Amino acid sequence: MADRVPEPDTNSDERTVGEIVLDISEQTSGLIREELELAKAEVSEKVNKILRGSVAGLVAGVFVLMALAMLMHGIAWLLNDLFFDADVWLGFLVEALFWLLVGIGAGLFAWRSFKAGAPPTPDMAIEEARLAKESFEAEVEESFGGPRP
Image (cartoon, rainbow, N blue to C red):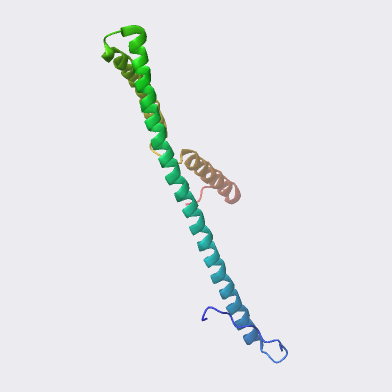
């Protein structure tokens, strides 16, 4: 039990200021260690919960993807039965073209989003810093009667 902080003496009349300061620093150090251990345990628990949730979400996503594939297959057969009688491939072709258009639209949206966000520089923060610098320089000039070298 090396981590255990010694209890302060109850008879504080006989202790020096140095001993009291030493006791307080040891108790503070022990308290900080315990708080760090508690924080580690809490973070570890939360990470484990997030990990379990992520795995469950991934499994759910796989099943939804399988269901979507079956739904798309059924729609292709429905198109075949309604419109194309003997040419089964036409139902699948129509559906493939539809999903291709959806994919192209999503790709364009992603491309525009990446283009708008690249490069990821803090433009507003840089502008604010430039304005603050100019304001500070103006105040210095005003206070000292001219530009500073």
